[in-house]
Amino acid sequence: MTLPRILIFYYSHTGNTEKMAEAIAEGAKAAQAVEVEVKRSESPWNLAGFDAIIIGAPTYHHGMTDGIKKFLEQIAFHEVNLKGKIGAAFGSYGWSGEAPRLVLEVMEHKLEMKVLKPPLLMKYKPDEKGLAECRRLGETVAKEVKS
Image 1: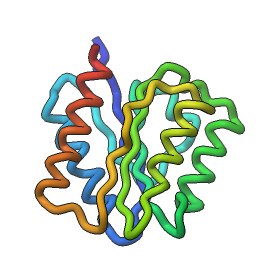
Image 2: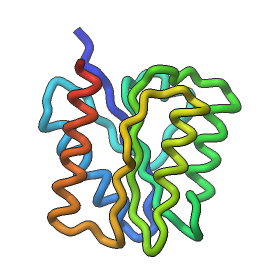
Image 3: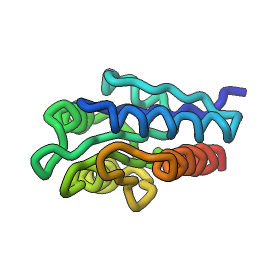
C-alpha cells in the first residue's frame, strides 16, 4: 500500500514562510501514514504524483512573488492535471497578505483542486501560537488526504 503524498512547496526570502513550511510538515508527519516532502523548487510535472499540495507564498507588494506566479502559470500552461487533489496555501506578510488568497483562487478555479479555506496568514515572523496553527494545518491536510 502506498502512502498518500503531500508536497509543501514554498518561497521564502526572510525565512518566515520557511518556518511556517517546516511547522506544517511537522503537523502533517504527526498525523502519520502520509509521506511529506518540503521543497523550495519542484517541476510542475512531478505534481501529479502528489495527493495534496500546500503552497507557501509570502506577500510582496500586494501580490505573490514572481517565482510562485511562474510556477502556477507553468502548471496551467502544461495542463498538469491536479483536478480533485487537495490544495492549501499559507504565507507571511508585512501589511496586506494577498498572495496566499491568490494562490487558493488559482488552485480552486484554474486547477480545479479541492482547496481548504481560508489560507493561513502570519504577520511577520510566526510566534509559538502561529507555529501551532501551522502544525494544525499540516494535520488537517494529512487527515483530509487520508479520508
